[in-house]
Image (tube, rainbow, N blue to C red; front, side, top):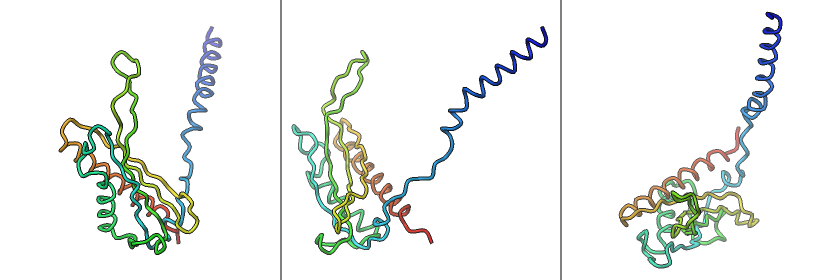
Length: 178
């Protein structure tokens, strides 16, 4: 009886070890994927305005009009000072394409059926290598909606701040290691 119990306990421990092995294997850290070096090596950038109106029934739903994303991104990039902001793509290493857009946003209601909110707003920054026209990186930040326009405006500013934080991070990660 004691032997049967020990054997059962050993089998139980072995079974638990085998079951947890895949979970342990998934937890091993992989090295981070590299960020294109062109982002670090670039000295100048051109900022393209891909525009953006969000709600077709209320063009000022986030305030600031269709060029707000461009104006705010340009001001933030200028304040950051990492890249010289070129007035022409011909004088730049990178093209930062900024866009504010909306898409239909499916969500689950309390009845667990899919319905549709009017829209889901987002800021999207696409980084292109001007010389090769290759897409190097893309950052998308959701912009939360709100009932009051003043809160929507704050949410827009907050999302722009997060986008700039991500841009700073990738510009740092892509820096060549010496």
